[in-house]
Length: 211
Image (cartoon, rainbow, N blue to C red):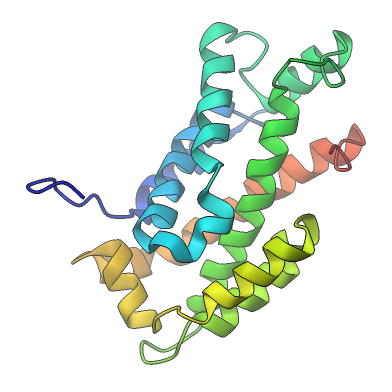
């Protein structure tokens, strides 16, 4: 970090507010609000450094790609439903040299599963307990299913260096630890609803197996 640059911490209230805003009518999800929440989630991975390299390496690229699609075509990329409909009707899912929003969003969806599970588990720890085991458990339960063996192995090894819960929250939340811990339960609640809605929409359209 450059000298004099202020460290920007992770704020669970921002994530909660944006995910809550993303829950629009007709069981749909607003893409702009979802990405705003994910921008804040990305700070968590940045603050944790290389330990989360396996998930953060191309996360920013995916967020930026979806933001670019939304900026260019707000009508079709406004919500998950409109995005799926647009790309299916125009055969864009299989089109070469086209960065599909549906495929890209699926990667963020899988990442959200991991971070939600991890935050849920560390929320149940005491400040003196190490977070490495619950991080490994969360990873094996979620993202590991989509990663090749080499990535899984490297990720699990990296997680052995995870700090205690107290030190982790200080690292990512600064002096706002207590406020973030108070928000955590309701943030996880709304994130679960967003995740389930997204999962259901991909399930309905049989899109979970997209490579």
